[in-house]
Length: 134
Ligand code: CO
Image (cartoon, rainbow, N blue to C red; front, side, top):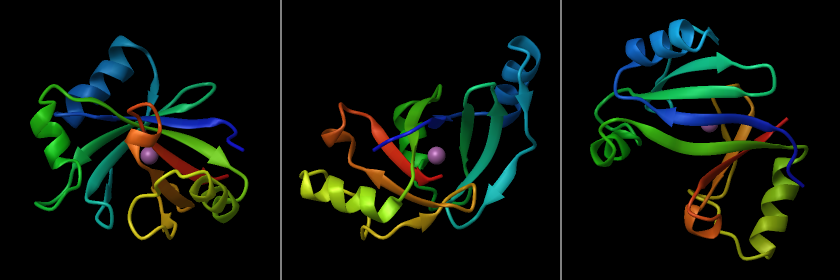
């Protein structure tokens, strides 16, 4: 069912520092920050030849990643995003297999303007999994 690894998301305590680290120290192509008010985050994408790294930084008081940063003040890996060809078919298949889909189970528009869903980390080896319709 799952296809390419679309991105690995890392919550960062300092976007400028994270950008400089990947741009200057690791020599990667790094995007400008984009505020995503609907998701309560500011994102920066690192383009790699085979996938992307997504930096997440809290935006606003209600940010869903504020708690994560409290627990992991130095930052840390937040989720993996896999591509699927059909997100509703993937959701139904996973639910039938007993996996928990977060939220109301309806796909939301993600950072790339494509439908996404999140799967419960306890059902996937302690890792939050995002599915994105490719
Ligand atoms: Co993501």
